[in-house]
Image (tube, rainbow, N blue to C red; front, side):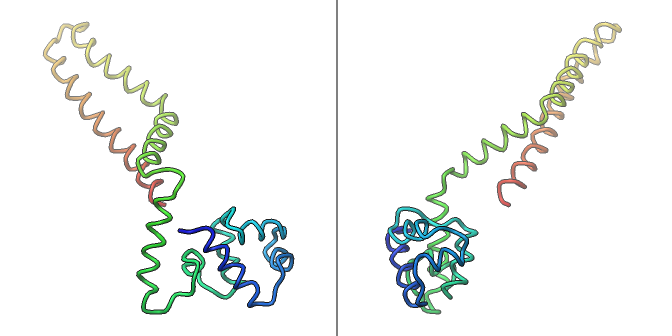
Length: 164
């Protein structure tokens, strides 16, 4: 994705519509300096602004991201390229977002995890306290099942937030 090419395309479209930077800025709710920064390739409009900009300039968001008019037969291929380009230029990689949501889930559930740890410790010690050592064999099984259950809950949370 070439910001300078996109900026030139925005500038050309604005001129085709017969608008000044100030007029386009007023219609979009931004300053003329913001429009100038887009056109110079210094900044990219955010996705909400892309929607407004595409409506105002009578082009698709895909064409804005490509920085050119796209013939119908190339539209799908160009859309795929733009999506891949946006994903690669994202501020955070997929793995970074995944780690973030895992940490967030752990922070939000630290008390619950603490209570489960206490239950696990009791499951290990209680059989000896009541003189039934054979019950101690269940403690690792309970721990493994609980770990799997919690990990599954965490991954469901992570995936539901990761792909939204």
